[in-house]
Length: 131
Image (cartoon, rainbow, N blue to C red; front, side, top):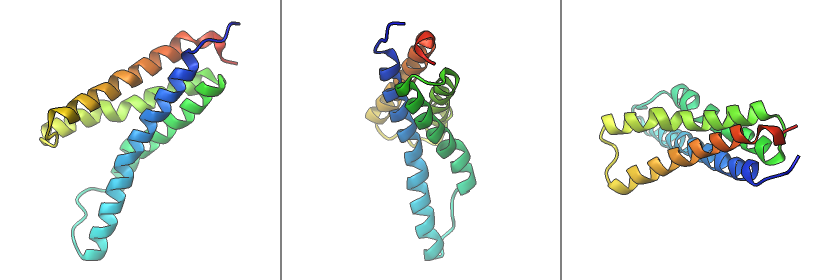
């Protein structure tokens, strides 16, 4: 079977999307930790952040690794899809709470969604290259 660039590009995009998904967990964890010792109120449950961002982000990074190695197509595809999920429910939450302050933030989030959809598509198209 001919080896193409598709799994490599998909793996990089999936890993990048997963890293972006892990970022809110780290940020909120640090902010919440600071509030706990300052006597403030924690505004969000860390278990929610773990379930919404950390787990899908880690799965996306693992799926990107499998895509780069061209191993286990199902895990690579599942990881790319997991990388897409936080962006699909995170964007409406930010819009509802009016947390998107500038148009550049909205553009960056849109580009992330498009790049991860591209990663899912590339993994799906390159199924024959995986062992």
